[in-house]
Length: 167
Image 1 (cartoon, rainbow, N blue to C red):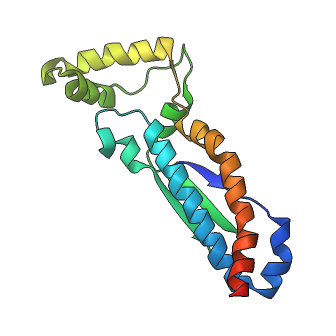
Image 2: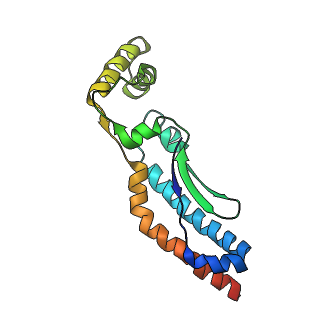
Image 3: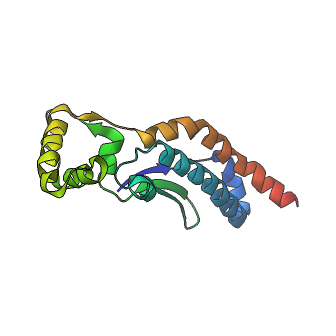
C-alpha cells in the first residue's frame, strides 16, 4: 500500500481539548475530511491513466479520516502495489519488471494480438529494466501544492470550535 498520512500537532488546541473534547474532535474531523477530499482529488488528477483508465490506479486512490478521538489522521493512498513505482519511477539498469502485466497492457493499450503480446511485453519490460523511467510524483506534487492551504485549514479548527461554543 502506498499512502500519504497527514499529521499535525496544534498547540492552540490543548486547552480546548481538555474543556471541550467532543467539539474539538467533531470540528477536527470535519476539517480533516475537507483536506483529505481535496488531496485525494488532486492526486487522482495527476495520476497517469493506463489500461484501466479511471478504473485502474486512479480509481484505486482513496482518502479517509481515521479517528478514535485524538489524534485525528488523514490518509490518502492506494492498495495497488505498483503505485509506488508510478509515484517514484524506476532507476535504470535494474531487473526487468514482470512481463505478464506489461503483455496485458500491450494488448489493451497498443492493440497487440494475444499471440504477440508476450513477445512485445518482454521487449518493453527489458527496455524498462535498462532505461528505467521517471516517476509521476502525483502524491508528492499534490501535497506540495496543498500543504500551505492544509495548514491554514487546520489552524481554522480553533476558530471553528470557538464559533460553535459561542452559539
